[in-house]
Structure formats: structure tokens, C-alpha cells
Length: 99
Image 1: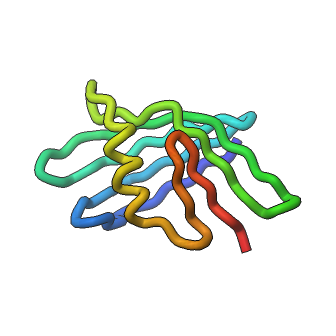
Image 2: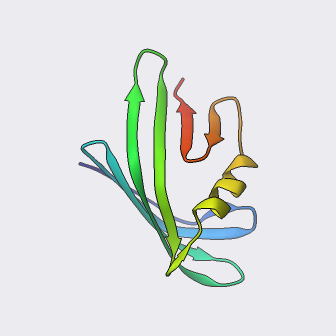
Image 3: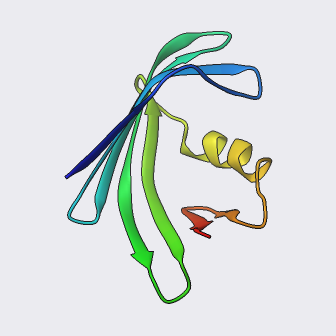
């Protein structure tokens, strides 16, 4: 089981605090406090795997909820704006190349 905690990240004018990522047995759970026009807690889940042959971490996101609202598509829309050569997004997948 791996667990990480981050604080005070800013993404496109949206504040994200207390981000928690838990990974166990190829599955992940994610939670964080969001402050934007409205504030609340976002939670997400999915599967994750690392391919050492090409150094790519692949996360398949099952869902991301903000309260009772499913915001998965909106999150992917925002993530697509942040793509780089080592960070690619194709819903429901996120690909991160580790160098």
C-alpha cells in the first residue's frame, strides 16, 4: 500500500488542498479538497499499472465525483489542456512517461 499527501496545488485558478492518493494491488483511490467558485471534496478511483519496458505509468479513471456530481468528463477536459510529451490524456486513461 502506498499513500501520498499533497497540499496547496493550483490548477487553472482552482485550489486543491489535502490531496490523498492511495495505491494498493493495482487500484487507486484519490481525494482532495477543491476551492473554486464552489468548494467541496472530490474523490476518484480507478486502476493503475506501470510498464517498465517503456517506463509508462497508466491510470484508468473509473470516476471522479464532487459531492454527488460525476465530474469525470470535466476533469478530463481540464487535464487535456495540461498535456505534455510525458503527460498524455485519452479518457478514461492518463499516461505518464517516467524518465
